[in-house]
Length: 188
Image (cartoon, rainbow, N blue to C red; front, side, top):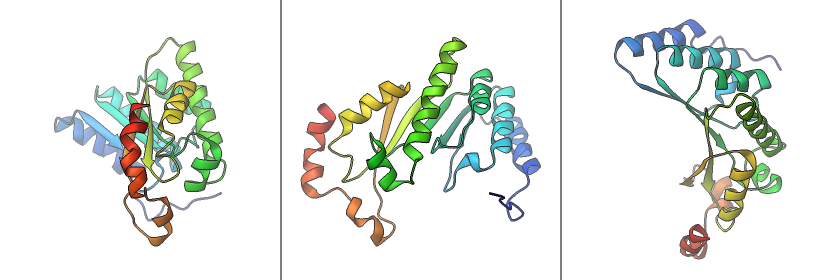
């Protein structure tokens, strides 16, 4: 699929921001947003390299689907700090109902590949975090998210509450009973 980025900032502007940030004393970068950072993989990898070359700390939040082996090797080689992967369920049927078809399979395959690359290169970096939005589909399955983190090489899990942006999301809101049961599921 060809994507036209003519209405977005050119790569050079983004790369210059890193240099300007370093000159201004910036210590840490978070690459995230309302889109997928890996839609522009060459730019993202160049940003990451430049951030690390300046000795700054870097974090990426991604759906995890679009990485290649070369991208993951690059992140290990530059000792990227944190890769936060959004997975909203401990299995394909739960996650893909919220996200997109095959996203669970692609993301978990990439996480396992990253874990393999880190073992091959005896590297602890990048730290991998599974990120999930609490929904009616996963609130009672947090223990299974922990199992998934272990299986994929993630070192921790971050959870956030769901914010309703449209009526399409209403079925995914936690019920009052599910909210009341959360402490029990967190303990488990």
